[in-house]
Image 1 (tube, rainbow, N blue to C red):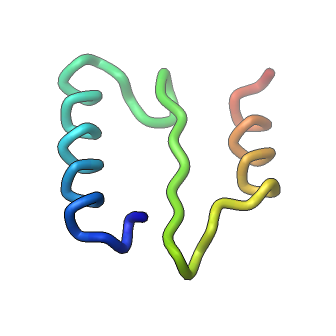
Image 2: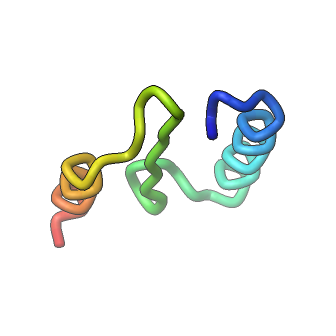
Length: 54
């Protein structure tokens, strides 16, 4: 989806709103990204979960 210019512009807008609200990626906000050529994998999801220290 991030390969779609309209979608990615909207995603960036949302990210800027998260920052303005005090949500920092990797601190209080965990995010993943994917595109047609690089899909989100279970391994990536597990890596993100592991980084949360749960």
